[in-house]
Image (tube, rainbow, N blue to C red; front, side):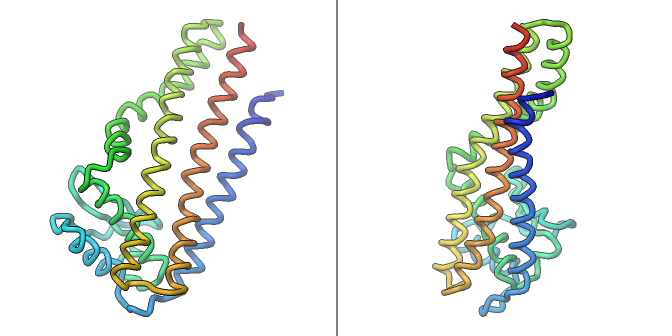
Amino acid sequence: MDVGYVIFVLPAFIFALWAQGKVRSAYDNYSRVYAKSGQPAYIVAASLLRDAGLEDVRIERTPGILTDHYDPRSKVLRLSSGVYDSTSVAALGIAAHEVGHAVQHGVSYAPLAIRNSLIPVAHFTSSAAIPLFLIGFFMRSGTLMDLGLLFFLGAVLFQVITLPVEFDASRRALNMLESSGCVSGTESVHVGNVLNAAALTYVAATAVAVGQFLRLLLLRGRRD
Protein backbone atom coordinates (compact mmCIF):
# COMPACT_ATOMS: atom_id res chain seq x y z
CA MET A 1 0.00 0.00 0.00
CA ASP A 2 1.29 3.43 -0.97
CA VAL A 3 0.96 5.14 2.41
CA GLY A 4 2.45 8.39 1.11
CA TYR A 5 -0.22 8.63 -1.58
CA VAL A 6 -3.05 8.06 0.90
CA ILE A 7 -1.68 10.50 3.49
CA PHE A 8 -0.27 13.28 1.32
CA VAL A 9 -1.53 13.11 -2.25
CA LEU A 10 -5.10 11.84 -2.09
CA PRO A 11 -6.38 14.58 0.28
CA ALA A 12 -4.73 17.21 -1.92
CA PHE A 13 -6.37 15.77 -5.04
CA ILE A 14 -9.77 15.76 -3.32
CA PHE A 15 -9.22 19.38 -2.32
CA ALA A 16 -8.23 20.20 -5.92
CA LEU A 17 -11.40 18.60 -7.27
CA TRP A 18 -13.47 20.53 -4.74
CA ALA A 19 -11.71 23.77 -5.71
CA GLN A 20 -12.36 23.15 -9.41
CA GLY A 21 -16.03 22.57 -8.65
CA LYS A 22 -16.10 25.71 -6.52
CA VAL A 23 -14.69 27.96 -9.24
CA ARG A 24 -16.96 26.46 -11.88
CA SER A 25 -19.99 26.91 -9.64
CA ALA A 26 -19.06 30.52 -8.88
CA TYR A 27 -18.48 31.25 -12.56
CA ASP A 28 -21.79 29.68 -13.58
CA ASN A 29 -23.73 31.48 -10.83
CA TYR A 30 -22.29 34.94 -11.33
CA SER A 31 -22.28 34.68 -15.12
CA ARG A 32 -26.03 35.17 -14.75
CA VAL A 33 -25.65 38.26 -12.56
CA TYR A 34 -25.19 41.32 -14.76
CA ALA A 35 -23.43 44.49 -13.68
CA LYS A 36 -25.51 47.67 -13.62
CA SER A 37 -22.90 49.48 -15.69
CA GLY A 38 -23.89 47.34 -18.68
CA GLN A 39 -20.35 47.43 -20.07
CA PRO A 40 -18.92 44.27 -21.63
CA ALA A 41 -15.74 42.83 -20.15
CA TYR A 42 -13.47 43.85 -23.03
CA ILE A 43 -14.59 47.49 -22.73
CA VAL A 44 -14.04 47.42 -18.97
CA ALA A 45 -10.60 45.85 -19.46
CA ALA A 46 -9.64 48.51 -22.01
CA SER A 47 -10.79 51.26 -19.64
CA LEU A 48 -8.81 49.83 -16.72
CA LEU A 49 -5.72 49.49 -18.89
CA ARG A 50 -6.01 53.15 -19.96
CA ASP A 51 -6.43 54.25 -16.36
CA ALA A 52 -3.25 52.32 -15.51
CA GLY A 53 -1.36 53.94 -18.40
CA LEU A 54 -1.09 50.65 -20.30
CA GLU A 55 -2.56 51.64 -23.64
CA ASP A 56 0.04 49.53 -25.46
CA VAL A 57 -1.60 46.32 -24.18
CA ARG A 58 -3.89 44.76 -26.79
CA ILE A 59 -7.07 42.84 -25.99
CA GLU A 60 -7.97 39.76 -28.00
CA ARG A 61 -10.70 37.13 -27.93
CA THR A 62 -9.44 33.57 -27.38
CA PRO A 63 -11.38 30.31 -27.74
CA GLY A 64 -12.23 28.03 -24.85
CA ILE A 65 -13.80 28.31 -21.42
CA LEU A 66 -11.90 30.18 -18.69
CA THR A 67 -8.83 30.35 -20.92
CA ASP A 68 -8.32 34.03 -20.05
CA HIS A 69 -4.72 35.11 -19.55
CA TYR A 70 -2.23 37.92 -19.98
CA ASP A 71 0.79 37.31 -22.23
CA PRO A 72 3.66 39.52 -21.01
CA ARG A 73 5.88 38.65 -23.99
CA SER A 74 3.54 40.16 -26.57
CA LYS A 75 1.62 42.44 -24.17
CA VAL A 76 -1.71 40.88 -25.12
CA LEU A 77 -4.62 40.33 -22.78
CA ARG A 78 -6.71 37.42 -24.04
CA LEU A 79 -10.29 36.97 -22.91
CA SER A 80 -12.26 33.78 -23.51
CA SER A 81 -15.36 33.85 -25.67
CA GLY A 82 -17.69 33.59 -22.68
CA VAL A 83 -16.00 36.52 -20.97
CA TYR A 84 -15.05 38.88 -23.80
CA ASP A 85 -18.39 40.60 -24.47
CA SER A 86 -20.29 39.51 -21.35
CA THR A 87 -21.57 42.13 -18.92
CA SER A 88 -21.76 39.73 -15.98
CA VAL A 89 -19.95 40.39 -12.72
CA ALA A 90 -18.06 37.10 -13.25
CA ALA A 91 -16.76 38.29 -16.62
CA LEU A 92 -15.78 41.70 -15.26
CA GLY A 93 -13.91 40.09 -12.37
CA ILE A 94 -12.01 37.72 -14.64
CA ALA A 95 -11.12 40.47 -17.11
CA ALA A 96 -9.99 42.77 -14.31
CA HIS A 97 -7.87 39.97 -12.83
CA GLU A 98 -5.97 39.70 -16.12
CA VAL A 99 -5.60 43.48 -16.18
CA GLY A 100 -4.10 43.06 -12.71
CA HIS A 101 -1.42 40.85 -14.23
CA ALA A 102 -0.77 43.45 -16.93
CA VAL A 103 -0.37 46.09 -14.24
CA GLN A 104 2.02 43.82 -12.34
CA HIS A 105 4.07 43.51 -15.50
CA GLY A 106 3.96 47.24 -16.08
CA VAL A 107 5.24 48.09 -12.59
CA SER A 108 7.79 45.24 -12.55
CA TYR A 109 6.10 43.47 -9.65
CA ALA A 110 8.92 41.33 -8.24
CA PRO A 111 7.05 38.04 -7.63
CA LEU A 112 5.70 38.12 -11.21
CA ALA A 113 9.17 38.76 -12.60
CA ILE A 114 10.57 35.86 -10.57
CA ARG A 115 7.72 33.59 -11.63
CA ASN A 116 8.10 34.42 -15.33
CA SER A 117 11.85 33.83 -15.17
CA LEU A 118 11.26 30.42 -13.61
CA ILE A 119 8.75 29.19 -16.21
CA PRO A 120 11.30 27.50 -18.56
CA VAL A 121 13.11 25.92 -15.61
CA ALA A 122 9.85 24.81 -13.99
CA HIS A 123 8.66 23.16 -17.20
CA PHE A 124 11.87 21.17 -17.46
CA THR A 125 12.17 20.19 -13.81
CA SER A 126 8.50 19.20 -13.47
CA SER A 127 8.66 16.93 -16.52
CA ALA A 128 12.01 15.36 -15.58
CA ALA A 129 11.55 14.98 -11.81
CA ILE A 130 9.30 11.92 -11.66
CA PRO A 131 11.11 9.89 -14.36
CA LEU A 132 14.47 10.59 -12.68
CA PHE A 133 13.15 9.64 -9.27
CA LEU A 134 11.51 6.41 -10.51
CA ILE A 135 14.64 5.32 -12.38
CA GLY A 136 16.65 5.95 -9.25
CA PHE A 137 14.05 4.15 -7.12
CA PHE A 138 14.08 0.95 -9.17
CA MET A 139 17.85 1.05 -9.72
CA ARG A 140 18.39 1.85 -6.03
CA SER A 141 20.37 4.93 -7.00
CA GLY A 142 20.24 7.49 -4.21
CA THR A 143 21.87 10.08 -6.47
CA LEU A 144 19.14 9.87 -9.12
CA MET A 145 16.39 9.89 -6.50
CA ASP A 146 17.89 12.96 -4.85
CA LEU A 147 18.19 14.68 -8.22
CA GLY A 148 14.55 13.88 -8.92
CA LEU A 149 13.59 15.30 -5.53
CA LEU A 150 15.61 18.44 -6.20
CA PHE A 151 13.90 18.91 -9.57
CA PHE A 152 10.46 18.35 -8.05
CA LEU A 153 11.25 20.86 -5.30
CA GLY A 154 11.79 23.41 -8.07
CA ALA A 155 8.27 22.68 -9.35
CA VAL A 156 6.90 23.12 -5.83
CA LEU A 157 8.65 26.46 -5.43
CA PHE A 158 7.16 27.60 -8.73
CA GLN A 159 3.67 26.85 -7.41
CA VAL A 160 4.43 28.66 -4.17
CA ILE A 161 5.66 31.83 -5.92
CA THR A 162 2.51 31.74 -8.07
CA LEU A 163 0.29 32.27 -5.02
CA PRO A 164 1.24 35.90 -4.19
CA VAL A 165 1.11 36.74 -7.91
CA GLU A 166 -2.48 35.52 -8.24
CA PHE A 167 -3.70 36.95 -4.94
CA ASP A 168 -2.17 40.34 -5.73
CA ALA A 169 -3.77 40.36 -9.21
CA SER A 170 -7.17 39.68 -7.65
CA ARG A 171 -6.66 42.43 -5.07
CA ARG A 172 -5.74 44.89 -7.80
CA ALA A 173 -8.71 43.74 -9.88
CA LEU A 174 -11.28 44.44 -7.20
CA ASN A 175 -9.69 47.80 -6.30
CA MET A 176 -9.67 48.89 -9.95
CA LEU A 177 -13.26 47.84 -10.55
CA GLU A 178 -14.48 49.66 -7.44
CA SER A 179 -12.46 52.83 -7.96
CA SER A 180 -13.56 53.07 -11.59
CA GLY A 181 -17.22 52.61 -10.68
CA CYS A 182 -17.59 49.55 -12.88
CA VAL A 183 -18.99 47.63 -9.91
CA SER A 184 -20.45 48.78 -6.62
CA GLY A 185 -22.21 47.49 -3.54
CA THR A 186 -23.19 43.84 -3.72
CA GLU A 187 -21.56 43.59 -7.17
CA SER A 188 -18.19 43.97 -5.46
CA VAL A 189 -19.06 41.09 -3.15
CA HIS A 190 -20.01 38.93 -6.14
CA VAL A 191 -16.75 39.75 -7.91
CA GLY A 192 -14.85 38.93 -4.73
CA ASN A 193 -16.58 35.56 -4.53
CA VAL A 194 -15.54 34.73 -8.10
CA LEU A 195 -11.93 35.80 -7.52
CA ASN A 196 -11.70 33.96 -4.20
CA ALA A 197 -13.00 30.76 -5.80
CA ALA A 198 -10.44 31.08 -8.59
CA ALA A 199 -7.67 31.61 -6.04
CA LEU A 200 -8.54 28.29 -4.40
CA THR A 201 -7.44 26.45 -7.55
CA TYR A 202 -3.93 27.85 -7.16
CA VAL A 203 -3.87 26.91 -3.49
CA ALA A 204 -5.02 23.41 -4.46
CA ALA A 205 -2.32 23.11 -7.14
CA THR A 206 0.28 24.03 -4.53
CA ALA A 207 -1.16 21.50 -2.08
CA VAL A 208 -0.98 18.75 -4.72
CA ALA A 209 2.63 19.63 -5.53
CA VAL A 210 3.61 19.65 -1.85
CA GLY A 211 1.77 16.36 -1.30
CA GLN A 212 3.59 14.72 -4.20
CA PHE A 213 6.93 15.97 -2.91
CA LEU A 214 6.28 14.59 0.58
CA ARG A 215 5.24 11.26 -0.95
CA LEU A 216 8.49 11.07 -2.92
CA LEU A 217 10.45 12.03 0.19
CA LEU A 218 8.81 9.18 2.09
CA LEU A 219 9.62 6.72 -0.70
CA ARG A 220 13.20 7.98 -0.72
CA GLY A 221 13.50 7.27 2.99
CA ARG A 222 12.41 3.68 2.46
CA ARG A 223 15.30 3.12 0.07
CA ASP A 224 17.95 4.12 2.61
